[in-house]
Image (cartoon, rainbow, N blue to C red; front, side, top):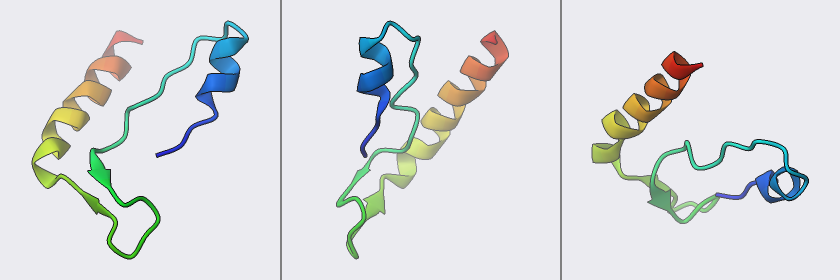
Length: 52
């Protein structure tokens, strides 16, 4: 995926990136996610929200 996070991070603004799913072929007809990674990514986001 793409992110504008590099712009905010360059300004010293705390920036989160990489919370999405693993996969490939973004924005193509063949785009996919690695389904087996969904629980792990969900747990990562849940832990982040809990820490806030």
